[in-house]
Image 1 (cartoon, one colour):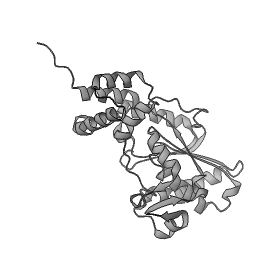
Image 2 (tube, rainbow, N blue to C red):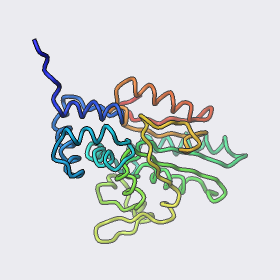
Image 3 (cartoon, rainbow, N blue to C red):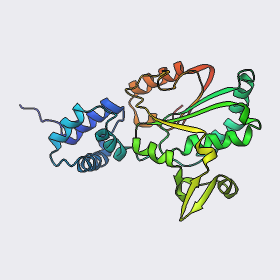
Amino acid sequence: MATRSKPKHRQFGELISSRTGLRIDERRDDLLRRSVKAGADLAGEDDLDRYFESLRNAPTSSPLWDDLVGQITIGETYFFRNTGHFLALEERIFPEVLKRHQADRRIRIWSAACSTGEEPYSIAILAREIIPDLANWNLSIMGTDISKHSLQSAREGTFRDWSFRGVPQERRDRYFQQQEGLSHLSPEIRSMVTFNYLNQKEDEYPSLDTNTHALDLILCRNLSIYLPEDVIRSIADRFYDCLIPGGWLLVGASET
């Protein structure tokens, strides 16, 4: 008896997983179909077989892949998401890191899978508020993501009301300028964060080239829920190597 071939959208799902680590199981078939159709439309391709071959032959960092990834990874993020994490940063993690680096006055932080930037910018705001002599510190905050569209949005530093759920109005007024229904982050905070493309499934890290070495703190929250176990283990091993001895890894509450 002849075996049935896999549906075309599932072939796309396997290719996406092999390149990005993102797992789109059968429960999210509708998302996969919509994402593939939208990606093909953006590529100006009405033949899915040709689109599949184009993706297979293109590097994952290409605009072709970025348009497709952008359809899949519509991130759910907002400023100071999960107040318990930021309380831990303020009361436990930052004081310990500051004490450890009193001599060299150097702190290195990586927000992995940062989406549109609310997380690393929240870290920058917190650092501004709790480090009284911040100007005397070499503070590096980097955000990375697999979606170049999200990274461009993060660099622009312009946000809608949805990004401020639970943020006190006083804090919002202090760091953002309101204009035509949008909130524009102050240049002072924007300048504290750099953003770079990084595919945690493919790219090499730790690495001097990607600035993912000798880190005090890595935040990677709510990414592993989309990844298969073997990819999670590989990423966790590499995170460990990215951290200095005694460094911190902060993950989502459901990921521990």
